[in-house]
Length: 292
Image 1 (cartoon, rainbow, N blue to C red):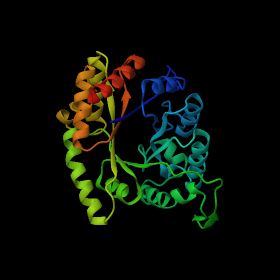
Image 2: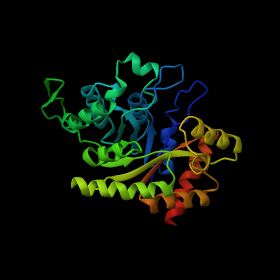
Image 3: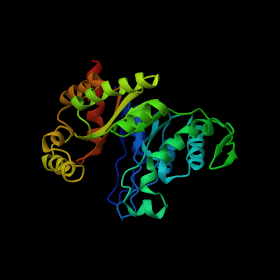
Image 4: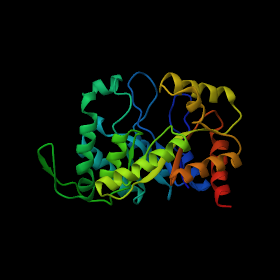
């Protein structure tokens, strides 16, 4: 099971980039950075710049967008940033992308993105991104453009739990990246993903799950997270209670194995509830326990 996690932040929400080296030493496959700029005063940082800083602090670990909001950015600009990061990091990028969350947030209005066009803008970007990154001559927004020097196209993971996201992953991606989903629900979705791939005559994308872990004894933090899933995401209480990954390394290993059995090849977990360093060590220990 491939594992990744996000960086810890200080009280102001600034990511501690130096901890990317610690993740590398623990054997993590990637450090992940979400793209959650809302513009409402909530601390958030540009994912590309944070991953560039993480690249400079490390040698081997993957640099994963988890996930980049394509509709909020000009496609040619995204390609240039990914191309640059590939060259500077030695080809360590994992490009998770999606239609973006928080479409009613001030940031979306400020960058002039119409909510109704999110899917179309994402599909149009995915159609040309690989060619742009490779340095091929591509027509974008009516302009013929060639970005040089070309770079290897990173694995492209398509985020989202909907059928539209699964179909997008089959058509454009190397992987499908659902989040906030239980192993049981993932198993059912994985069956449908294979059906879609068969219908379209395409390979079945790899599955990479995103979620949240609370690997310290903090029942209040877990309860608060579950409550937010019910209040914000509209989940049923029983379903929400099954989302957070908790417990000892042995219990976490069982949960990782359940996701693997459901079809996941990798998992990215945000480490919530305090003592990030200890939680990062416990997740690494749980992954090792799976192969022991």
